[in-house]
Amino acid sequence: MKEKLLNLYQLFCVMFKVGLCTFGGGIAMLPILEAELVEKRGWVTSEELLDWFAIGQSTPGIIAVNVATFTGCKRAGALGGCVSTFGMVLPSLIIITVIALFINNFADIPWVGRALKGINIAVAAILTAAVYRFSKKSVKNLFGLILLLVSFFLIFIFNAGTVWIIAGSLITGVVLALLRGDLKEKNAADKKSEALNQGTAGEAEGSEEGKND
Image 1 (cartoon, rainbow, N blue to C red):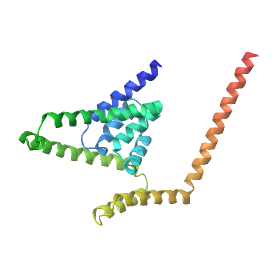
Image 2: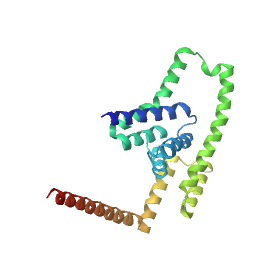
Image 3: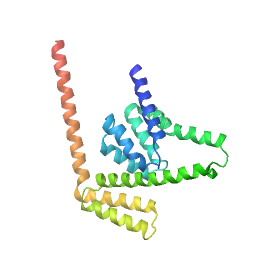
Image 4: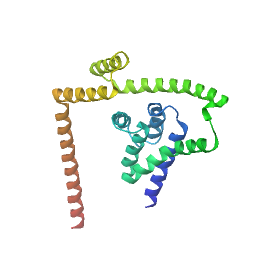
């Protein structure tokens, strides 16, 4: 019980830190999430983080909040997901509440306007770096590069809706995986791994029974 509470406390503190120290939205949070969750603590892998970002972009809600929920659920089940999500949104809730209660016409204050302009420039740089890192890890072959370029031109030249881009990319990826047999290979690998795990468990039980005899 004590270990579970400690795990929940760590989840809350890490997500609170990420929510407090990051500007620019979900994509801009990718570097700090990777540093905190993958490199520093090893709670998730880079592949899992990228998958969760992709899912977060395809589902309602804020990307970083969805990632926090996934991380919490992996570490401590449904309760961990709730605690992580609360930790991620709490800093914004506190800051917005304070601003709304104590500062009238917040954006009209001269020094605030200048500060926001500086923050916007910094956020643009952070987003550029995050998109580059995300693309570098996601685009692994010629098909990925072609899909990236086609999506870019459809969005920025033809003003295609991002929902249709995501849906089209999803369908294209599934069809390609079926044609290449990737899904069958994955299912076969999963079944083989499950069989090996069952065999190992059976050997362990047999060894334990032999010791008892």
